[in-house]
Image (cartoon, rainbow, N blue to C red):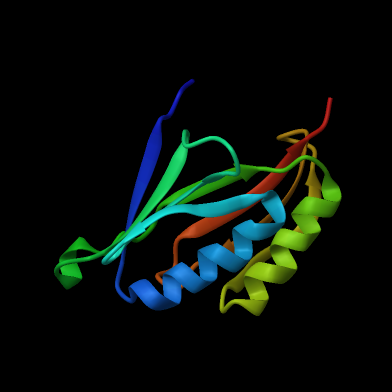
Length: 124
């Protein structure tokens, strides 16, 4: 395993929690743990790798400019991620499409703090 977990510090924890909960649901990623100001997202039945969403303590602590890509099992999941992310307040970076340079079908959205969040399905 390359990465165990990634942490994102949000300016508005409620808005970001709602965004990630809805956007990642089509990928079968759920809130697996929650405490005050913290939500841990992981694939149902696996607690690693995970995404930790925490409330930023100061404006300077807000995570900005990060790119996080989530694996999808097929194009349908990528499409569903994109629709759910937009419905949950994300903004469109790139609609679902095949990217030959990556040999992947992918979609990109911005989370409430402007981070680049992607879902992709690798093609062989």
